[in-house]
Length: 405
Ligand code: FAD
Ligand code: DHB
Image (tube, rainbow, N blue to C red):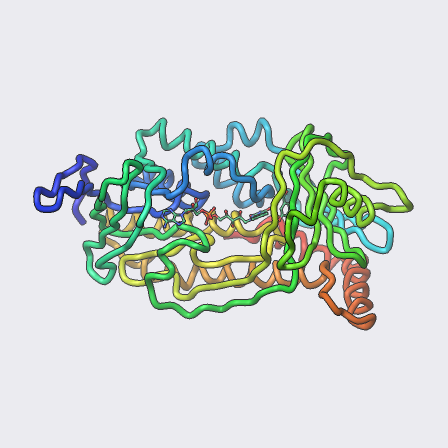
């Protein structure tokens, strides 16, 4: 494999600026940024291109729960310092139903924990690390397209932030461009798709959490989730209709619904405060297989989506790029393609496990529109069995904190 040069080459013919790198990464979400960082540690060059602005990427409010496997990895690769200072370590979660909290004690059941640390904080740490190490991150690009992925000289074309046409000549392309990106659409794949008849309305509020841990609440009016970001910020979610219009959810209605669904004996754990963010997230399960075509590799949401109930999305993105960085380093530094050949199959094993866990948590905790009394009793029976069975609690705990790589 040839080394790479980041020096721009001007193509005299069409005035298109060409840059050569080993790995062209599309997307500066957690997957793309972490892949770039891990490749750098392995001595492999990369360039990351991102269609959004840097401000937008740094502020986008999304995931909050890091598996133990994820925090271990972030520490190992020098990204644990602020996370360990500011992240909230949680030794368990609660399932809230039948008017009571039922704790899933991770520490006691599996001897591990999770860390609540916002995805945008991970992203900020990654951007800082890439900037510190001289990484190339190009924001505000447009018209991204991939070419020649069946050859060993694939290319990415795009327009830079000034609208100028650019070309990235690569050894390999990593499609880390999320569910709506261009990478997956550029390759043949089998799509496994499942839609849910509900969505989540999420708010971020400047209000001190009154609970120390997350509560996943089953209520006849619909699921609700109590989470947090810091000792001053609460993160709360409500199950709503899939086509819900945010305008129909003024703040008063959101608070009233949260109180109703989360109250136990008339006592609500929810403390109100000014809203910092409000949005609706669709729920979907999706897997694209294989996660590789020629010299294009998919990672993270570009290849798979889970409903958020199991808190698995960002953690799966991290697991993918951990594998992919090892595989690409072996290929590009030692000309050894074995890990590259097995990347898709290995990654998909963890993906399908997370799909199964996220689907089962979602099914157990949400009210399907039109669900009859029988279906609700089955859900309650499952919840009551889970809360009373060490085997069932251990299964939730080991999946939630992250199965070993
Ligand atoms: P993304 O974060 O989507 O990044 C892809 C990037 O590619 C984006 O920046 C996008 O702008 C860019 N891009 C797209 N197209 C192009 C293009 N053509 N050219 C250049 N760039 C492009 N996961 C968890 O693990 N735990 C949780 O608690 C959790 N909670 C969640 C709550 C909510 C409300 C939501 C919405 C998601 C949650 N997730 C959670 C899922 C998690 O946020 C995603 O799985 C994660 O962002 C995936 O990272 P990614 O890098 O693969 O994709
Ligand atoms: C959060 C999001 C999730 O999807 C989840 O399962 C738990 C917590 C959060 O944003 O805090």
